[in-house]
Length: 179
Image (cartoon, rainbow, N blue to C red):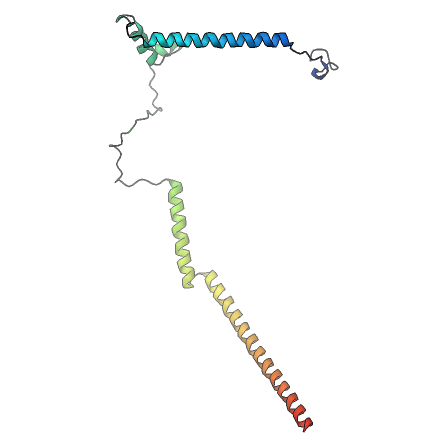
């Protein structure tokens, strides 16, 4: 249970503000700390550039470098040699060892994708030749539509001729009645 029970939430607490004097003191301390760091860096840089200072040959720093380069083993791991038959060591191949001429084995997904594309191409060829069921149905539907359109065009043509004959007959009647 939180401090103060159910009634005492964090929102009702009194706010505290940092005084301007404390802020100034913190800023001065920060500036001094940065100045000291810069001086130390300059001193270290000058010490590194000085060629007269050399490390003694038997200082022992080389021995510690060799130990750091090897992986440190914790606990009993350093004492027991473990050979895991399931662990496969990654071998880095050189560029000269990689043969680009040999055919690359395709993965299952790549094989399936190629088969899918080839099947689609075969289907499209058969469809264009009119050998598939869908193509036959499409061609039959097209034939029916063409027949309907031809009939509609003939009907329109006959109606047009009938209208022209009717118009000609009415003109002929008008011209006869005027004479």
